[in-house]
Every structure is written in structure tokens, then in C-alpha cells.
Image 1 (cartoon, rainbow, N blue to C red):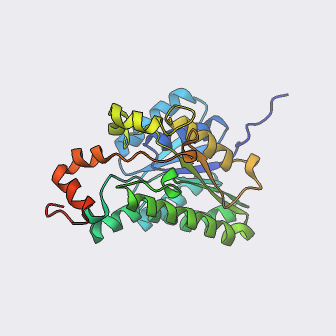
Image 2: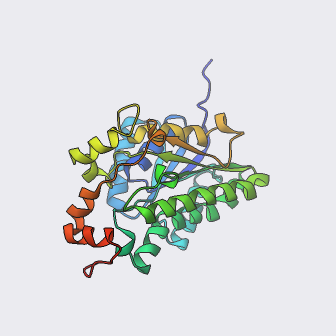
Image 3: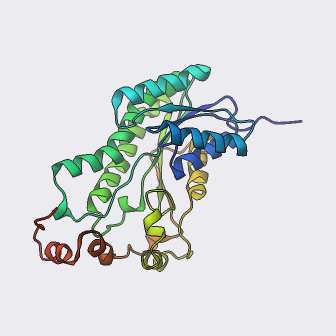
Length: 285
């Protein structure tokens, strides 16, 4: 007797759907029967991922919605669109995020706001506009993408660390507040994982070697590693799990982050590195 896939008749919305982790999460959900809406700012990039997924999961249903996950109206409209597919919404996976190496003394108020918006506001909006629809569907799961940087200090990446730490606090608070509506909120905490935003790091042997030295398993992350954890937290197997963040990092959190001073010297110049190490803000931010 043929059994239905575990996510049959479920609807999922994945923000950052054209990125490596977002596309991998969409594939994992599709393979187990969910209909998936990919949200992202670039329609052409979403269409490419849609075509790829149609080729790998031919029986799956994947549609796209072009919009900015940091814009309240775009996010609300994307949720409404996802609901319209089957008059329900069951899974929300906000994958938008990222950050670049930048010493604290080279930040200003605008760059801080941008970092917080990308990593924290985007997840808040997904929770804010997704939770009522999940509750209306009888409950559901929100799975955010955090980072090992939320738990481990990372020199020259302090604002990203702060944003991801804030995200994990938001996950806990939202899980407690939304539990009575049967809406679960969790996060996956990746180590360094291959994606468009990290491609430069993966292409630099000294950076790769520095990270691998700190990973007991001895390999760095691939998007599908993260997607498997997201799929678990999104599905019925984790029905009694909420307010949690799971590290998927090859054991990286057992050790430490590399220093990567050379990366700052390469990005901003040796004089800028010397200045911030001496506690001065360089003139040319």
C-alpha cells in the first residue's frame, strides 16, 4: 500500500529562495510532498531555481513570488499568495541573511541598521505575517536560519554576531508566545556553508584552511546539510520541539573561529587594520 509523503498537502514559503540554502530547503520540502513558494527580490534568479527544482522533483509544485523580505508589504503579500495556493500555510523558512567582515570602528548607524534588517528584521516579518496564517491552518512550523556566530565570538564580524544572537532571542520569545496557537518556532545554526555570499571565502585557501582546522569532522558545510535539519524542524517528526536552535557545523562550536586578520588587510588595507587594532577609526571608512 502506497503511503502519502509526510508533507503531503502542506504549503511552505521559503524566503531567500534563490540562494543556496533557500533552494536546498525548498528541494527538501518538495521531495516530501509540500507545495513551495520561493520568495526573493530577483525574478530571474527565482525562475532559474524553479526550473532546476522542476527537473529534480518533477512531481513537486513550486511557484515563485518576487518581493523584498525586509519590506513589510512584500512579506505580507507573499504570505497571502502562499495561502491562496491551497487555502492554508504550514511552513515558513526565512533564509534571508548575511554579513561581511567589517570592524566595529568602521561601521556607522546606517551599516548597523542594514545588518540588523537583513538578519533580524527579515525573520521578524516572516514570523509576524506568517504566524496568523499558520495558526489559521491549525498550527505549523517556522524555521529560521541562524549561525554559529550567534554563539561564538568572531573577530571583525561583531555586528553579524549581534544580529544572529538577536535572532535566536527572537526565536525563543516567539516560540513561547505562539505555542498556544500551535505555531512552533525554531532555528538551524549553520557553520561556514557554501553559498553565493560565501563563495569568495571558499575560493581562498588560507580562509578555508583556517576554518577546517576548527572543525572536528574536517569538512565545511554544503546547503543540503542545512536543508536536512530544516526539513526535520519543519515536519511532524519534530512536533514536540520549539524554541530551539540546532548547530549543524561539523562540530565547529566545540572549538573556535579563526582570526582572519589577513582578510581585513585584504579588504581595507594594512593601515586600516593597524588603526582599528589600535582602537582608532580609519579616516577612509
